[in-house]
Picture (cartoon, rainbow, N blue to C red):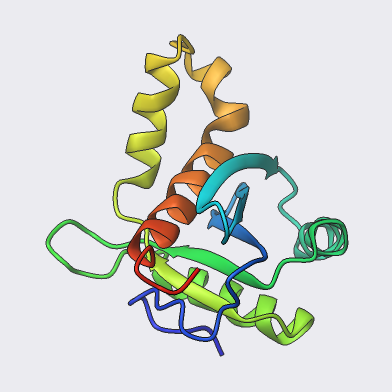
Length: 156
């Protein structure tokens, strides 16, 4: 079962790859990071909407990157209320764990998409059409970086 949104890295090795997901109904952003360096990078955006196609792509990514754990963003409102998409994100996290048997950590992703928008705009991608293909992957990067930063005190 995915761990609570406290984003604890308990049980993680000092080294290894993590994959993070910014789950959405239309797209899933994916990022990759390393426990040793505590640095995350955007990887890709899954544009398929059918679950079978999504999980086939994810299976290939897991085979390629061989992560020790996965991170899934859990959306919430600024006032602490759960976002409408949060139950779907939890379900996605449960499916990842159930299908692949890899530990899954849920992490608060409030404002990750807005921060990704700002980051891409500041990088010169001012039009929505220019940002859209990479927005979710950058949001996943921010989610994963947040997880790594929260757990910077964990033994590395």
